[in-house]
Length: 444
Image (cartoon, rainbow, N blue to C red; front, side):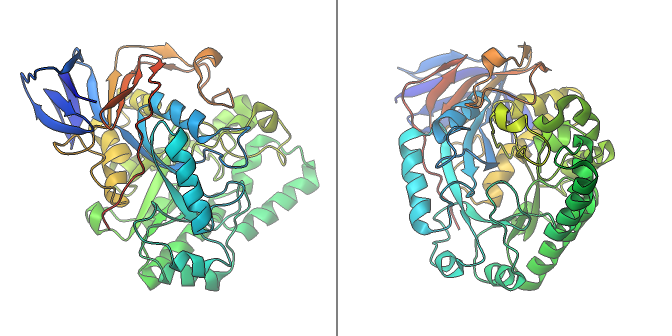
């Protein structure tokens, strides 16, 4: 691929902002400095715009195989790189489910042909695949996923003896979806008796309640403490749950970690009236007070990672009555601009944003040579113009499902360039025909 020199960059990396140049040769960053030059290098004058490490999304649902009418690895990874996400970790609730080593490797093979972004996958734990899980090499993929509450794909793991055995039999990060199934079923039945299937959307966070979330997540944390498992709690949605996590030790020493998602930081229950099932997620978007506590926990390092839980469905699927409308929504194209918008509003610094969306995923999952702007690391980079305002419209939405919960929202910042392994994969709305994405590797 030769050499590329980025000049006049405002670099955001490792807790600092500074002006400098970045020299890329083939796949790697070979020099960071000032007034750099290099013969035969393609020079891109960044003109003072931000250069950040590419974002690493630890939770996406790209719907392939089996659900490709909603999205696929090619379509959704393409949208991701337009949004500055250069690496993703995809979830196992596809059809068939990723619950065997064979199905896991089949996904890797598909991604090697079609993905625009670097990729890995989570292996799905079930009530009856412990022996298969034991055979999984700790460096084979990003980790293990357990659904301790049912969601799209019905991979519920509800046998407590099995859960404890899984916790006791893997060194890998165990990522969990925590909602108590019994609590949700009882709440849902009560509302169905009153409203039938057409339950008003404002009751979604009452049905999938704070109690349901906390009961499940607190049990998972207690079991991890008992077994010594490496636990990562996905999409924390309540302020109460943030009390379960620590901020008094560095991330690489933590055995129990947490993630928050963009939608739980942006929306609140007040938005259900206007957006209805388009913001139906599991766990549910809850109170504005929960949203504020999540922001505090993120900034104070009780929560370690900021991700998307990108989960596209068609509008026809979403525009059904409450009990039939699936939970989830597309987010990878708009996550970085959305969080930058909140940064401009004073909710988070850009340095902290990069920590939570790039550095920390690399630390937590022990990803090799990614997540930072460092000499010798892969050149996964995103350039953002902070003064290029734009509005989300159907015409510029890249998801296969064709819609976004952010439709109509104006963002002040726009991704202009995305580099994947030193290759300019996205340039001001134009995608390279070459795909240079790689399988993520790990140092465990």
